[in-house]
Length: 122
Image 1: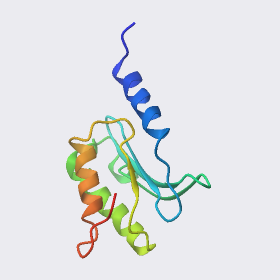
Image 2 (image 1 turned 90 degrees about the vertical axis):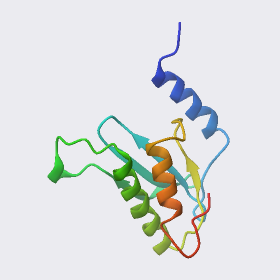
Image 3 (image 1 turned 60 degrees about the vertical axis):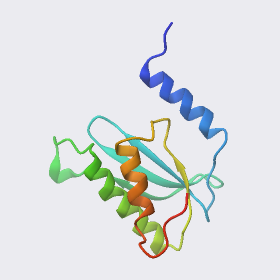
Image 4 (image 1 turned 120 degrees about the vertical axis):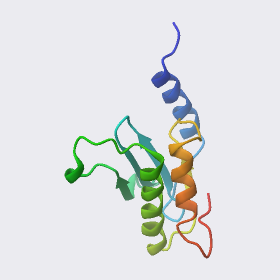
């Protein structure tokens, strides 16, 4: 049988996760996007702890679609400032099996540009 888009994405995700992992000094930044919202978290895989998380799910804006490049840029900058204040200057980017295009690319570029003086490394 032919694989669905979701099954293909999950297979790509499993292949990549076998290779990359995050630490406390260099956490794994994992992004998830649904049809309505975007969320991302910085994860320390050594201890299995989420260090920071951002999401477009807001109680005051229920029913609206927040899965767009503008929201991804905003969330990337927000997570970048959280990591910068914690003293973390590099991370491993986990695109979670999604193509590096559109929303995922906007998030990653905003995360890199969160610190104008020295760009975030991953």
